[in-house]
Length: 286
Image 1 (cartoon, one colour):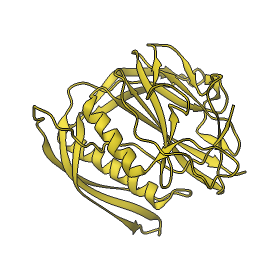
Image 2 (cartoon, one colour):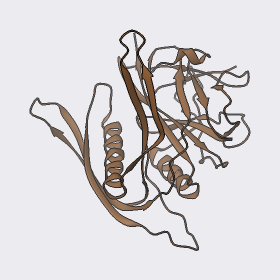
Image 3 (spheres, one colour):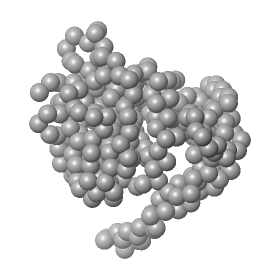
């Protein structure tokens, strides 16, 4: 089995959608919003800008279409205190179709903290049903009990996955200047992995999978794992070979951030049931 070094550098949750040509027009409306996020340690300007734009798009959708609760309320009881906690899931009842303009700038607050503020305008459409809720959690061992969002250098990397319906799953990783394709991996047939309803999977633990592990050359880096699921099979983007400057490790195939955004946008436009989960992870050098 080959060793693959993954330097996690980015954050992603995408609403960017390019609507393909259709015989029937979809009714869209104008939307716009401004949002900002604090630029945290280990976060690049590119990451902060991307995240702020996503947050602005979500706010624009919520302002026009609203937000709905789905999956009901989940009640949990603390065994020691007896405290009852109610947890619910929600979704924005709109989908981003196209962007007409976007601007970003660094700003400082009264405590001299640095923020990225972005404004976006575009067109969006209403959605009539909630997205599919699935579980996708990073692990540092091939067991679902090894769930973690904080890794050290050279720690193994797996993903626990479970869906309520049969479908197809893929996983990507946005870098500072590119996106790595983790699933499907090299030598794997198809553009995604078929999965059964309610079945439990530990991705990258099978005998044919690469040995993924976490790595950073910085003291600390932030990352975002992007897991994509759809009841319908979807195509993968065009991928390039790994970085020839890597002397010690074979890296996953990759594509530019811009090309990834365009590809995912086309998949969202074509498959309304396609869902994306994004998990922020940190990697510490020591």
